[in-house]
Image (cartoon, rainbow, N blue to C red; front, side, top):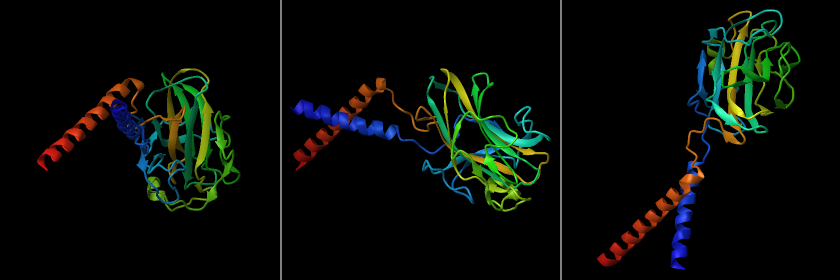
Length: 270
């Protein structure tokens, strides 16, 4: 009976260690790579924290962007100028796994200057597997999905989003924060995107944003909560595998022995 109690207590300690190790932390962008302007940020201006409850989110912005990062051959009349893009670390997925994330498009541009943002699923060779979503500056109608853009492969909730109008205050916009060129400026609020992986393989998730036809009045994209089959793409806390459980139980048993030895020493001193 005493042995069973000790094993149960050791397992409880091990479970406590395991529970601590599997806590999901806010997005850190550890292992993500990109070009242009990107980073992490807490609640700022019109962009609140995401529905995940994380303490920060990731972002890309055209402010400080570079040339040559737009989607090839899309967008209608005109052309992309400068922007930013970021790619997740490589992750494995099985057919049918759910890829999910949240995004929030913010733009200070308007009228015919149709900046846009996107997310894509890429394969191991960085070739496009699926265009997941687009969001685009427009003087009327829905910002997401973007007009004159290819069909989406992800399911969005809500399925369509007119802009929340007004000069958006958000520090990643640089000097454009708090300004508005014309009708169409504002932000979408947080939108959920979900996509079912079609085939097992190794993938990357890409987020990007570009200016359109000029480099003035900046736009950006906030993103958060990227998961595959319910697990974060970039966990900042190691998740123990079943092979580690014996070691964790051993750690628990060792902690119990130390506690018992300390109690005996205190009794002898008394």
